[in-house]
Image 1 (cartoon, rainbow, N blue to C red):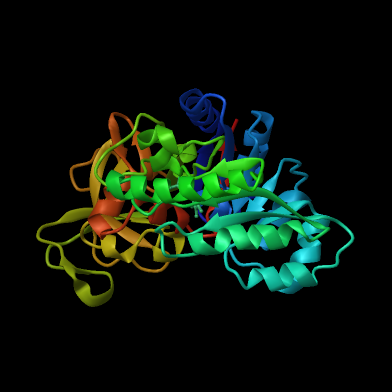
Image 2 (image 1 turned 135 degrees about the vertical axis):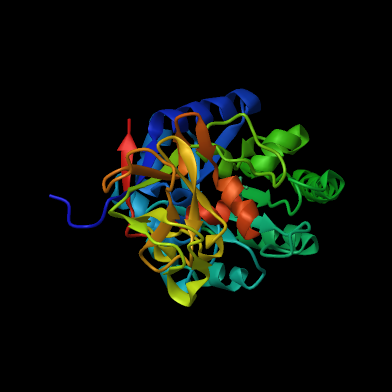
Length: 367
Ligand SMILES: *Cc1c(COP(=O)(O)O)cnc(C)c1O
């Protein structure tokens, strides 16, 4: 029995597998850490990780310990790395569950010195070579490593940096890379290099072969989406976002549609209401601007998008009635609406479009 509304996300796991294989082919012998933060960019971290694990991925990365623990609860066995903040009191839980955490500032050294859990805590060091977000200053790295080496139950399993512009400004990315290399050389002199060395996000995987080291860290490409603002990639989107019309009717000319009456029918029109609103991730910025697919054709969103419902104009469409399938993201017939198209219309990036799809939209997995 269905108690929600006719609205769902389809996640095509075969396409996910194909995208993973494609990345593998590009990076050759490098280990791949798949980025599955934010519920795998809205695709479902548990299901996505299970598939990638089966395909032999080296490990995955998430934003928080909560995301990591959810994966362990789902019996994920491969290495998991948290990229973000960890509450000091939870370090023992991380170690107990074999979750590697990121050291991204010098203050963390104090936490590590205080750590007295029974299990060895695995850490990876993030160096800020130019992203300006998280990470040790390059000048802090060698000293920190020397200190950590003295600690019995802490092991450094990886060292990484993150690009700010691998999708847009390659010369800046190369500067970051050079800085990263300088530090790696220093560590090599100290006879210390951890198992995993990585820098490449999806844009790095496609644009910067010299950034591979022995591990890469792609996210968006796994989901078949482009890391570039102005260029598509030859990967297939894994996600489609669909709904069914729940109400159709003929509206006379001159009637206001939705909050604020921002749309007035110019003639007698056939309208359909779909059970998708901004709380589901159909950005309100698409009001009177966005389109959806129905009967294999583009239909315009009219009036303001509301929290749970949106109206579309289906005048001149054949046989529209409640129950017709509507595609918000994805293909229908020969037409396709991509997350990138929506992103452009709303002044954002495809990453935001897929991660904003609401929790109450069920995900359906095609194996
Ligand atoms: C999100 C993230 C990635 C993945 O980036 P994509 O552009 O999706 O490939 C890699 N590394 C870090 C540190 C991240 O935060």
